[in-house]
Amino acid sequence: MTFDFNGIELYYEIHGETKGAAKPILILNGIMMSTKSWQEFLEPMTQFNQIILFDFPDQGQSGKCSGDYDHKQQVHSVIALLDHLQLEQVNIYGVSYGGQIALQVALDFPARVDKLALFNTPAETSYWLYEVGQAWNNAAHDGLTYYYATIPYIYSPRFFAKNHEWMENRKKILVPLFNDEAFIGSMIRLTKSSENYNIKSRIGEIEHDTLIVGCEYDFVTPFYQQEELHAAMKNSKLIFIPNSGHGMMYEEPELFISILLGHMNNNKTEYKI
Image (cartoon, rainbow, N blue to C red; front, side, top):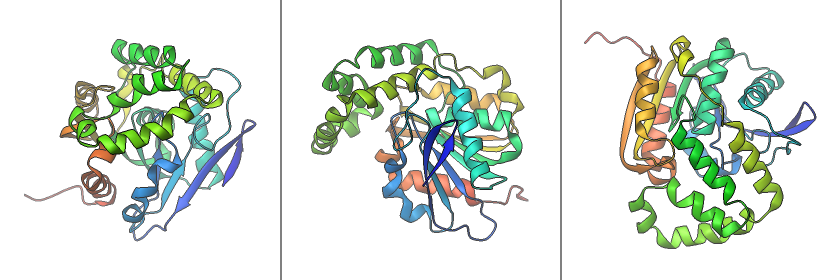
C-alpha cells in the first residue's frame, strides 16, 4: 500500500491484528533495510500484535528523493503515515537509522508514541560514524567495493565466518543491487541525511518507557553509545547482547523476538518485591 508524502509515494504494509491492550508496533528500518527485511519475523511478531512496516523516502519500495534532506523529512514522513492510518499512538521499534528517527519522533511528537524499543541506536553521529559513512559513500562507484565497505562490518566476525555459504549467497544478491545507480543514489542521500544528527542535549526530555539494546561486536554504532543513551534517558532499560554484531536480529533471531515482544507487551510497571 502507498500514500502521497509531499509528492513522494511512500510504501507500507500492515500485518496482523492488535489483541487485548497491545498497541500496534511500527517498525522503522535500518539504513540499508526495507519492509522485505522483516518477512521472516512476521509470524511470531503478529501472534499478539499488529505490525506496521514502512519504507522511508529513498528506501525499499518507497519513492526516490530528488535532492538531499535531513532527518526532519523522515520524522515528518512517520507522522504522515500515522495520520494516513488514523492512528493516534503506536509503539515504535527502530534499529540504527530507524532508532534515530524514532527518538526524534518521540521528542517532537511525544503524544504519538507509547513505548520505544531502540536497537543499536546512538544519540549522535559521532566522528567515528561520520567517517564510516564517508567510507561507504566513497566506495559507491563499484558494487563489489561497496559490499566490502559495508556488509562485513554489520555482522560479528564469528557469525560472518561461521556462515560462509550464507554470506556468499548474500553477496550474489547484493552486489548487483549495489551496482544499481538509483539504489546507490538513495543510499548516499540516506547516509548524508545523518551527518548532522545530534540530539544528545535533548535526550533527557524523553519520558517514554524505552528499551535500549546494544551488542558486543557492533562496529557501526558501538555499545558505549547505547550506554550514553541509557544514562541520559529517565525511563530506559539497557540490554547488552554478547557475541553479536550490528545485525543482531539476524544473528540471534529468537532472542531478538523475545526481547522485543517482551518489552512491547508487558504492561505491568510496578512490582512489589
